[in-house]
Amino acid sequence: MRLVVTTGSQAGRTLDVERRLVVGRDEACDLALEDDEKASRRHCAFSPNPDGTLTVEDLGSSNGTLVVQTSVNLVMEPRIVNGRKPNEAAIPLPALQLSPLKLEGFHFALPITVDYGRINRRLEQDMVGQEFRTPLGDTVKVDGVQLYGSGDRLILALRVSGGVNGTLYTTGTPMFDERRGVLRFTDLDFTVDTRNVLLRSANQIFHENILSSLRSEAFIDLSGQLQTLRSRLAAALTRELGPDARLEGEVLSLRPRGIYPTAGGVEVHMIAEGSMWVELR
Image (cartoon, rainbow, N blue to C red):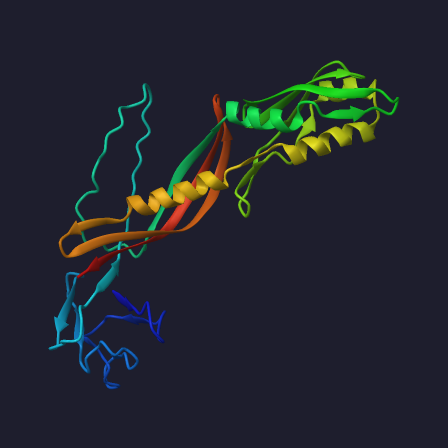
Protein backbone atom coordinates (compact mmCIF):
# COMPACT_ATOMS: atom_id res chain seq x y z
CA MET A 1 0.00 0.00 0.00
CA ARG A 2 1.38 3.42 -0.94
CA LEU A 3 0.52 7.06 -0.51
CA VAL A 4 1.17 9.38 -3.44
CA VAL A 5 1.24 13.17 -3.23
CA THR A 6 -0.54 14.49 -6.34
CA THR A 7 -0.43 18.28 -5.82
CA GLY A 8 1.70 20.91 -4.12
CA SER A 9 5.46 21.22 -3.83
CA GLN A 10 5.84 17.50 -3.03
CA ALA A 11 3.78 16.26 -5.99
CA GLY A 12 5.01 12.84 -7.09
CA ARG A 13 6.41 11.84 -3.71
CA THR A 14 5.53 8.26 -2.72
CA LEU A 15 5.47 6.70 0.75
CA ASP A 16 5.04 2.99 1.50
CA VAL A 17 2.45 2.51 4.25
CA GLU A 18 4.17 -0.26 6.20
CA ARG A 19 3.40 1.30 9.59
CA ARG A 20 1.26 4.10 11.00
CA LEU A 21 1.99 7.34 9.10
CA VAL A 22 0.93 10.76 10.33
CA VAL A 23 0.16 13.55 7.85
CA GLY A 24 -0.01 17.24 8.68
CA ARG A 25 1.73 20.62 8.57
CA ASP A 26 3.95 19.85 11.55
CA GLU A 27 7.51 19.13 10.38
CA ALA A 28 7.60 16.16 12.74
CA CYS A 29 4.90 14.36 10.74
CA ASP A 30 5.86 11.46 8.49
CA LEU A 31 4.45 13.46 5.61
CA ALA A 32 4.85 17.15 6.36
CA LEU A 33 2.58 19.34 4.20
CA GLU A 34 4.13 22.62 5.28
CA ASP A 35 2.79 24.60 2.30
CA ASP A 36 -0.81 23.35 2.63
CA GLU A 37 -2.79 25.97 4.54
CA LYS A 38 -5.87 23.73 4.70
CA ALA A 39 -4.04 20.95 6.54
CA SER A 40 -3.91 20.90 10.33
CA ARG A 41 -0.66 20.45 12.26
CA ARG A 42 -1.57 16.78 12.78
CA HIS A 43 -4.27 16.20 10.17
CA CYS A 44 -4.72 12.42 9.93
CA ALA A 45 -2.99 9.06 10.22
CA PHE A 46 -2.85 6.06 7.86
CA SER A 47 -2.44 2.58 9.33
CA PRO A 48 -2.09 -0.70 7.34
CA ASN A 49 -4.19 -3.69 8.41
CA PRO A 50 -3.25 -7.39 8.17
CA ASP A 51 -6.03 -8.05 5.63
CA GLY A 52 -4.59 -5.49 3.20
CA THR A 53 -7.01 -2.69 3.99
CA LEU A 54 -6.05 0.78 5.13
CA THR A 55 -7.45 2.63 8.12
CA VAL A 56 -7.64 6.42 7.94
CA GLU A 57 -7.85 8.16 11.33
CA ASP A 58 -8.88 11.80 11.66
CA LEU A 59 -6.65 13.44 14.29
CA GLY A 60 -9.05 16.27 15.08
CA SER A 61 -8.68 18.11 11.79
CA SER A 62 -11.09 20.95 11.13
CA ASN A 63 -9.51 22.46 8.03
CA GLY A 64 -11.17 20.64 5.18
CA THR A 65 -12.32 17.33 3.69
CA LEU A 66 -9.97 14.41 3.50
CA VAL A 67 -9.73 12.67 0.10
CA VAL A 68 -8.11 9.24 -0.08
CA GLN A 69 -7.09 7.63 -3.38
CA THR A 70 -5.96 4.05 -3.92
CA SER A 71 -4.96 2.20 -7.09
CA VAL A 72 -7.29 -0.44 -8.53
CA ASN A 73 -6.46 -3.50 -10.64
CA LEU A 74 -8.79 -4.50 -13.48
CA VAL A 75 -8.46 -8.09 -14.69
CA MET A 76 -10.28 -8.92 -17.95
CA GLU A 77 -10.90 -12.50 -19.11
CA PRO A 78 -12.37 -12.43 -22.65
CA ARG A 79 -14.14 -15.52 -24.03
CA ILE A 80 -13.77 -16.74 -27.62
CA VAL A 81 -17.04 -18.17 -28.93
CA ASN A 82 -17.19 -20.32 -32.05
CA GLY A 83 -20.39 -19.90 -34.04
CA ARG A 84 -22.95 -17.12 -34.29
CA LYS A 85 -22.17 -13.76 -32.74
CA PRO A 86 -23.62 -13.69 -29.20
CA ASN A 87 -26.13 -11.05 -28.21
CA GLU A 88 -24.55 -7.96 -26.70
CA ALA A 89 -25.49 -7.19 -23.12
CA ALA A 90 -24.55 -4.49 -20.65
CA ILE A 91 -22.78 -6.37 -17.86
CA PRO A 92 -21.87 -4.37 -14.73
CA LEU A 93 -18.42 -4.59 -13.22
CA PRO A 94 -18.10 -7.23 -10.48
CA ALA A 95 -17.89 -6.17 -6.86
CA LEU A 96 -14.52 -4.71 -5.88
CA GLN A 97 -12.37 -7.06 -3.82
CA LEU A 98 -8.90 -7.18 -2.35
CA SER A 99 -6.25 -8.91 -4.45
CA PRO A 100 -2.67 -9.99 -3.73
CA LEU A 101 -1.61 -9.02 -7.26
CA LYS A 102 1.18 -6.47 -7.50
CA LEU A 103 -0.05 -5.12 -10.85
CA GLU A 104 -1.52 -1.63 -11.02
CA GLY A 105 -4.00 -0.09 -13.41
CA PHE A 106 -5.27 -1.88 -16.50
CA HIS A 107 -3.86 -3.52 -19.61
CA PHE A 108 -6.14 -4.99 -22.27
CA ALA A 109 -6.60 -5.32 -26.03
CA LEU A 110 -9.14 -3.37 -28.06
CA PRO A 111 -9.72 -4.11 -31.77
CA ILE A 112 -10.23 -1.35 -34.34
CA THR A 113 -11.57 -2.55 -37.69
CA VAL A 114 -11.26 -0.45 -40.85
CA ASP A 115 -13.50 -1.91 -43.55
CA TYR A 116 -12.27 -2.17 -47.14
CA GLY A 117 -15.06 0.09 -48.35
CA ARG A 118 -13.69 3.00 -46.34
CA ILE A 119 -10.12 2.26 -47.38
CA ASN A 120 -11.02 2.02 -51.06
CA ARG A 121 -13.02 5.27 -51.02
CA ARG A 122 -9.99 7.01 -49.54
CA LEU A 123 -7.66 5.49 -52.17
CA GLU A 124 -10.02 6.33 -55.04
CA GLN A 125 -10.16 9.99 -54.03
CA ASP A 126 -6.38 10.32 -54.14
CA MET A 127 -5.37 7.93 -56.89
CA VAL A 128 -8.04 7.65 -59.61
CA GLY A 129 -7.09 10.01 -62.43
CA GLN A 130 -3.36 9.97 -61.69
CA GLU A 131 -1.18 9.65 -64.78
CA PHE A 132 2.29 8.16 -65.22
CA ARG A 133 4.48 8.54 -68.30
CA THR A 134 6.35 5.53 -69.65
CA PRO A 135 9.91 5.77 -71.10
CA LEU A 136 8.34 5.55 -74.57
CA GLY A 137 6.29 8.69 -73.92
CA ASP A 138 2.97 6.91 -73.45
CA THR A 139 0.67 7.90 -70.59
CA VAL A 140 -0.71 5.34 -68.14
CA LYS A 141 -3.82 6.50 -66.28
CA VAL A 142 -5.29 5.02 -63.10
CA ASP A 143 -9.00 4.27 -63.70
CA GLY A 144 -9.78 2.33 -60.54
CA VAL A 145 -8.28 0.96 -57.32
CA GLN A 146 -9.25 -1.81 -54.93
CA LEU A 147 -7.63 -3.10 -51.73
CA TYR A 148 -8.44 -6.51 -50.25
CA GLY A 149 -6.89 -9.12 -48.00
CA SER A 150 -5.15 -12.35 -48.90
CA GLY A 151 -3.85 -14.36 -45.95
CA ASP A 152 -1.69 -12.11 -43.79
CA ARG A 153 -1.01 -9.69 -46.65
CA LEU A 154 -2.96 -7.09 -48.61
CA ILE A 155 -3.48 -6.90 -52.35
CA LEU A 156 -3.82 -3.50 -54.03
CA ALA A 157 -5.20 -3.75 -57.56
CA LEU A 158 -4.86 -0.81 -59.98
CA ARG A 159 -6.99 -0.74 -63.11
CA VAL A 160 -5.03 1.25 -65.73
CA SER A 161 -5.37 2.31 -69.34
CA GLY A 162 -3.20 4.01 -71.97
CA GLY A 163 0.37 2.88 -72.44
CA VAL A 164 -0.46 -0.17 -70.29
CA ASN A 165 -3.96 -1.62 -70.25
CA GLY A 166 -5.33 -4.00 -67.64
CA THR A 167 -4.92 -4.49 -63.89
CA LEU A 168 -1.65 -4.12 -61.98
CA TYR A 169 -1.37 -6.03 -58.71
CA THR A 170 0.78 -5.06 -55.74
CA THR A 171 1.07 -6.83 -52.40
CA GLY A 172 2.31 -5.73 -48.98
CA THR A 173 1.94 -5.90 -45.21
CA PRO A 174 0.08 -3.16 -43.30
CA MET A 175 2.14 -1.17 -40.79
CA PHE A 176 0.92 1.18 -38.06
CA ASP A 177 2.59 4.57 -37.56
CA GLU A 178 2.11 4.94 -33.80
CA ARG A 179 3.34 8.53 -33.64
CA ARG A 180 0.84 9.79 -36.24
CA GLY A 181 -1.94 7.26 -35.68
CA VAL A 182 -1.84 6.24 -39.36
CA LEU A 183 -2.17 2.82 -41.01
CA ARG A 184 0.31 2.58 -43.89
CA PHE A 185 1.28 0.04 -46.54
CA THR A 186 4.93 1.02 -46.97
CA ASP A 187 6.32 -2.25 -48.40
CA LEU A 188 3.97 -2.52 -51.38
CA ASP A 189 5.60 -4.23 -54.35
CA PHE A 190 4.37 -5.63 -57.63
CA THR A 191 3.44 -9.30 -57.74
CA VAL A 192 5.69 -11.49 -59.88
CA ASP A 193 3.15 -11.74 -62.71
CA THR A 194 2.60 -7.98 -62.84
CA ARG A 195 6.33 -7.26 -62.75
CA ASN A 196 6.89 -9.62 -65.67
CA VAL A 197 4.20 -7.84 -67.70
CA LEU A 198 5.65 -4.41 -66.95
CA LEU A 199 9.16 -5.52 -67.89
CA ARG A 200 7.93 -6.00 -71.42
CA SER A 201 6.47 -2.48 -71.69
CA ALA A 202 8.41 -0.20 -69.31
CA ASN A 203 11.67 0.10 -67.42
CA GLN A 204 12.57 -0.04 -63.71
CA ILE A 205 12.26 3.73 -63.22
CA PHE A 206 8.64 3.56 -64.36
CA HIS A 207 8.00 0.73 -61.88
CA GLU A 208 9.48 2.69 -58.99
CA ASN A 209 7.51 5.84 -59.86
CA ILE A 210 4.24 3.94 -59.54
CA LEU A 211 5.30 2.17 -56.34
CA SER A 212 6.52 5.41 -54.78
CA SER A 213 3.15 7.02 -55.45
CA LEU A 214 1.28 4.03 -54.03
CA ARG A 215 3.37 3.93 -50.86
CA SER A 216 2.78 7.63 -50.17
CA GLU A 217 -0.93 7.61 -50.98
CA ALA A 218 -1.94 4.27 -49.45
CA PHE A 219 -2.64 5.18 -45.84
CA ILE A 220 -5.62 5.51 -43.50
CA ASP A 221 -5.72 8.11 -40.73
CA LEU A 222 -6.94 6.48 -37.49
CA SER A 223 -6.00 9.33 -35.15
CA GLY A 224 -9.63 10.46 -34.79
CA GLN A 225 -10.82 6.94 -33.98
CA LEU A 226 -8.04 6.49 -31.43
CA GLN A 227 -8.92 9.76 -29.69
CA THR A 228 -12.59 8.72 -29.56
CA LEU A 229 -11.60 5.32 -28.20
CA ARG A 230 -9.43 6.93 -25.53
CA SER A 231 -12.23 9.31 -24.46
CA ARG A 232 -14.91 6.61 -24.36
CA LEU A 233 -12.69 4.25 -22.42
CA ALA A 234 -11.89 6.90 -19.83
CA ALA A 235 -15.60 7.74 -19.52
CA ALA A 236 -16.51 4.06 -19.09
CA LEU A 237 -13.96 3.66 -16.30
CA THR A 238 -15.24 6.67 -14.36
CA ARG A 239 -18.33 6.11 -12.23
CA GLU A 240 -19.83 6.63 -8.81
CA LEU A 241 -19.52 3.56 -6.60
CA GLY A 242 -21.63 5.03 -3.81
CA PRO A 243 -22.33 8.26 -1.96
CA ASP A 244 -18.76 8.39 -0.63
CA ALA A 245 -16.73 6.59 -3.29
CA ARG A 246 -15.92 7.28 -6.95
CA LEU A 247 -13.99 5.12 -9.41
CA GLU A 248 -11.84 7.03 -11.91
CA GLY A 249 -9.59 5.88 -14.73
CA GLU A 250 -7.04 7.44 -17.06
CA VAL A 251 -5.79 6.02 -20.36
CA LEU A 252 -2.03 6.55 -20.46
CA SER A 253 -1.19 4.85 -23.75
CA LEU A 254 -2.66 3.15 -26.81
CA ARG A 255 -0.18 1.10 -28.80
CA PRO A 256 -0.59 -1.49 -31.55
CA ARG A 257 -0.01 -5.18 -30.82
CA GLY A 258 -0.86 -6.57 -34.24
CA ILE A 259 -2.48 -5.84 -37.61
CA TYR A 260 -4.55 -8.51 -39.32
CA PRO A 261 -6.22 -8.44 -42.76
CA THR A 262 -9.68 -10.04 -42.48
CA ALA A 263 -12.48 -10.83 -44.92
CA GLY A 264 -14.16 -7.48 -44.30
CA GLY A 265 -11.29 -5.12 -43.56
CA VAL A 266 -8.07 -4.50 -41.69
CA GLU A 267 -8.19 -5.14 -37.95
CA VAL A 268 -5.75 -3.29 -35.69
CA HIS A 269 -5.38 -4.69 -32.17
CA MET A 270 -4.57 -1.85 -29.77
CA ILE A 271 -3.24 -2.33 -26.24
CA ALA A 272 -4.78 0.16 -23.82
CA GLU A 273 -2.82 0.82 -20.63
CA GLY A 274 -3.64 3.21 -17.84
CA SER A 275 -4.32 3.72 -14.17
CA MET A 276 -7.42 3.38 -12.03
CA TRP A 277 -8.12 4.62 -8.56
CA VAL A 278 -10.92 4.90 -6.03
CA GLU A 279 -11.55 8.27 -4.44
CA LEU A 280 -13.09 8.16 -0.96
CA ARG A 281 -14.73 11.27 0.45
